[in-house]
Length: 239
Image 1 (cartoon, rainbow, N blue to C red):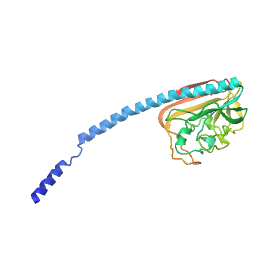
Image 2 (image 1 turned 60 degrees about the vertical axis):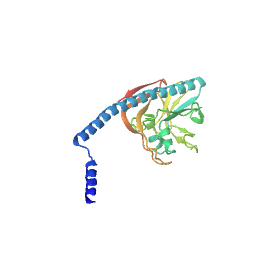
Image 3 (image 1 turned 45 degrees about the vertical axis):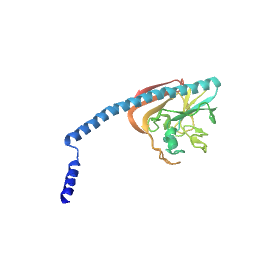
Image 4 (image 1 turned 180 degrees about the horizontal axis):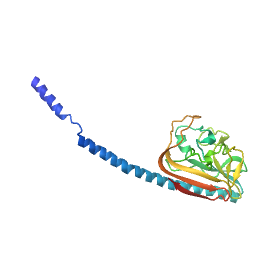
């Protein structure tokens, strides 16, 4: 009986294999290779997403400008954000945060009155691409104190009133206007900058809580510029 148990124990000891140093080195080498290949691939994917996001946004901006000219109306392109214009406080939560921070829409009104008449549905940047509301550039539309006061129904089902969000205003003369730092005057002639980044957001945010800004996951980013004097626009990639 003791001999039988000893044989089984011996077999168990023989079956307890571990990694040799050579095998560990091979595994580490494979992981390093996958990492080296994966990072450039992700950078390339982010770049392609940014390339597709900028023209789509510019198309919407052109639509807003043309609508203002054709219909002799005031038109706003609005951008929800968690930046200075809201003090970092959001009125939405959970997965709505992820959608809101990459959304924009076109709204029509008369002069500085926004009756919440939507020209477009809410549009979204590609998944993983967000507006960079934290970039400390004075020309960024997200650095205005109160960019616009609107009857803002997205994405809170209770439709909060007077929700201050960044916006670019197009007037019947075709020019683009941005709000001043005091949130009281629309200024002509300034160039509005809209920065786009590849990133991720924290969706574990409750209503009224501070929202985390998108965390950059790539060095690739893009800039859309709207020239106030003409209302024309362009974009380019930034590293």
